[in-house]
Image 1: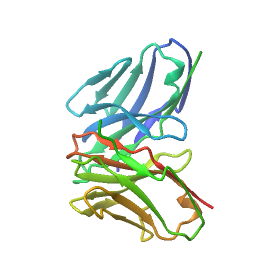
Image 2: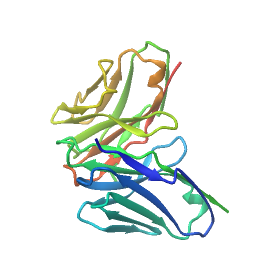
Image 3: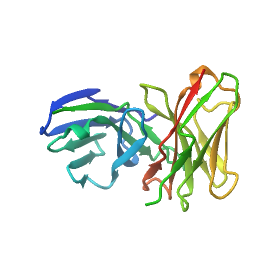
Image 4: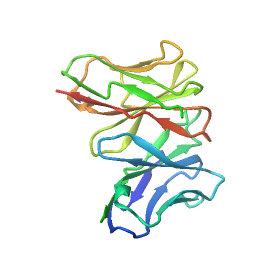
Length: 115
Length: 114
């Protein structure tokens, strides 16, 4: 059964700092990995999708990398801003899940960027 | 840009009552999902739906839950007799194709059972 772990559970940084959020998964046979942002009490905003054949994806100040063989992904946020404060979730689609292609989520990293 | 929509945004109900949560997935998508997130916990898979039938359900998705796609656009989750522990945010999601496609989420319905 796929398990997704995110470290750290919470992170507080001063504005302007570059930071890295970590995600690990136990079964490396995945189709893809998605990073999401969730504001308190709100829905899930998709940030980046990395296919299993890709090593990284970039969108603006965000860069996500994937090392499928070791079961790890990182989300790098450059020049953090207070508006980046949110919970960041990592989720994977297993190849072993048959034809339903469901996402398995980590618990998230709560990021606080202090002005 | 097409998006997944959900109604209502917040539903308050009494224990034992039936609730129906509604979703309109993106129009050309083929796979549909419900997930839930209890406050402070992980987003959990409930059920997936493809080709007009359930393709997988989690152990959470017991006989109290059902899903329907009554027409070409709506996708509903029904909870027959709500319990206090059903209080959670419920997310609908859809995807266009198989595992390499992105999954798109709706804004969620917050269900409060009193």
